[in-house]
Length: 192
Image 1 (tube, rainbow, N blue to C red):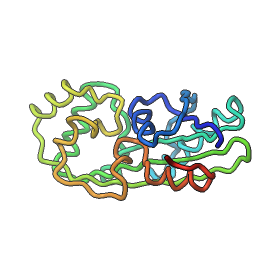
Image 2: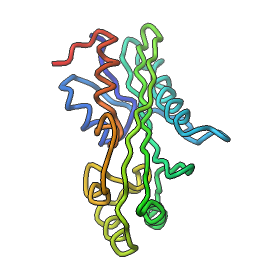
Image 3: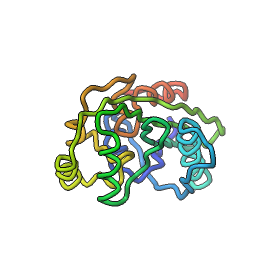
Image 4: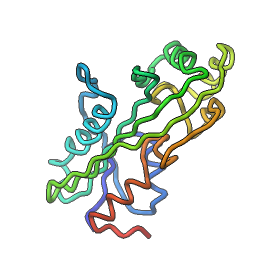
């Protein structure tokens, strides 16, 4: 089996990948994550997941490189990482009582052959009605400033959801393991 490389500095993605009980290393790719003009959200996450994997290919020949990227979509609006307390509160108040779809792009690049599998896994949440006080308590407690849409679903963020729907709950945290297992299997990886 080729060694696995996770092209991400995300502690959340690293934790998820450990669930597969496969040895891996990780490195942070340096790419421009800005959205292109008029780029649909699904194309954005697929492009960025692939770009993250490709950015490390030259430095890691003979590896299976996993790239992933996520955005939250509210109506036609793409919600990225808020970076500030106030923007996190704004995002959550905009999402109050609404349906938010998380799109997680996933790429698996074989840097030996150049073969790259790319997909997008959607996951939808219906939000509870939220008021400013609850949102501020949540943002203070979780500090979701590096999370798409300000949701930290692996923690207290789940308390903001009324219901969820999707093919893979791990995609909500940023690395869809069910789809990744399919991709790894196509590369001959045997999951313990």
